[in-house]
Amino acid sequence: DTEVTQTPKHLVMGMTNKKSLKCEQHMGHRAMYWYKQKAKKPPELMFVYSYEKLSINESVPSRFSPECPNSSLLNLHLHALQPEDSALYLCASSQGVSDREGGYTFGSGTRLTVV
Amino acid sequence: AQSVTQLDSQVPVFEEAPVELRCNYSSSVSVYLFWYVQYPNQGLQLLLKYLSGSTLVKGINGFEAEFNKSQTSFHLRKPSVHISDTAEYFCAVLFRGNQFYFGTGTSLTVIP
Image (cartoon, rainbow over all chains, first blue to last red; front, side):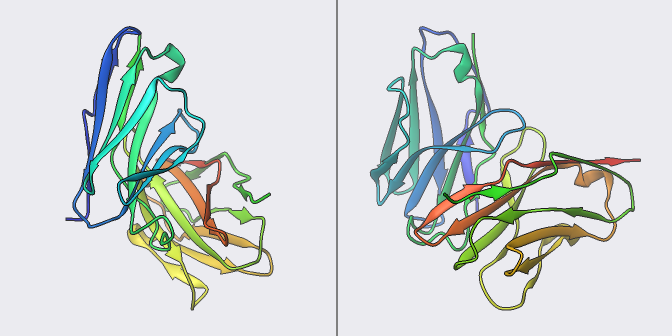
């Protein structure tokens, strides 16, 4: 299995809603990442998990809350989002945070629209 | 500060013509280099990567890239493009110190 699977593919939520994005990989990768991508822009790093522990938080607002229940799963909990948070949210994995010579494997993303 | 530059934000090219997408980066110290492609409403897919060895790297879908250490460049080429190559292309660099940077992207549009 060489894929990163993200669900849902599309999500529309109101500013008072709580929702979660899910990511799963079965490649044995020990590092997992959340990226945010606006249209025609490169991905922006949000969070990095290494061996199921949060190792990097790129000053992301607290309305985004990551969770890594096990080595294969990564969640992103969303609460009280703003319309400017509308974007494509990408999950990625790599062999390790200190072992990224193989590059990242990306999921297909969740297209989030906040109304 | 480290940086990755893709000077061409948009590249239109006719079908079956050759194309080169340019990528320059800020440091000649040991780096690993990548090109990713993103089709509309999709995630990023690794096209090719340079880690060491031959400076000419071949990837998927007929793409290749050449590592030029003296010019700190890693340009992507394809001798004959297809409509299906229309996508966003991102150059990325893993610098010494484990810093990973994406370029700003190049939108390739193949014209029939």
